Image 1 (cartoon, rainbow, N blue to C red):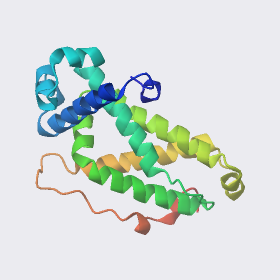
Image 2: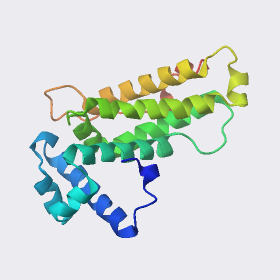
Image 3: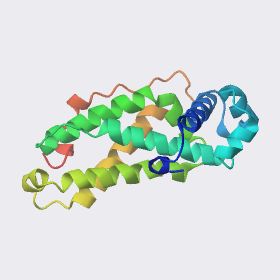
Image 4: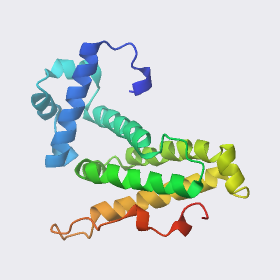
Length: 196
């Protein structure tokens, strides 16, 4: 269910999918994915079960679709759109955007991590690394760090940031009162970012 291939869907079909995704996201923040049924999702979305099956084969396919939407939203939100020629400024802006994005989406991200579809969650890192590699291959970035392989730098950076976010958002196991550790991207050591 790739969003890029949805041009054939009419407005009503897109609205139905949006309702189903919203319902699943809300329910996952309340209960584990394994406890949810298609009936639960349809009831929350106020959509008939036959309509659900016209769009998705099962709840796992809907969850994959939700992941693809989150992935697209994350890449579009976190990676800077404006022209930034300094690798340091680019990485600090991306880090700030990423931390803010995941802080806003904390409950849903944690629910996704606990959904039992770990492999789907890691697709996000692949997509983000591809986009970051594309950015790092631009001449202004290549000139700033000529000896750095963009693929290695992108994988390293994305892996480190997502690992930090996972640690930051999950806190210590067994302590429900623990709030996320306050992170301030503008205070992070600049040497971490692309050799600056």
